[in-house]
Length: 65
Image 1 (cartoon, rainbow, N blue to C red):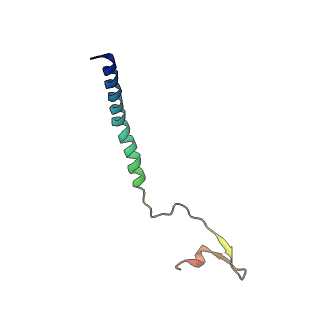
Image 2: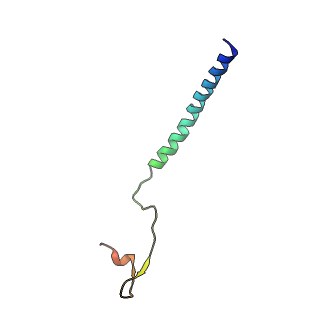
Image 3: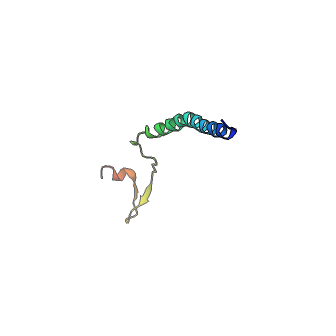
């Protein structure tokens, strides 16, 4: 074997080793993100608004609608 072919083999081997150790790390992060439930909204804001008659309305005024 020549030195060039040994060098290519070592680079390929290094790439395979990097994938073997990197893939589980990336996969675990992906699985953790997909395990989050989406039952709770990502953003909730309380508000108070004035209607056309000047009365202050809140989110509670619109419950059930």
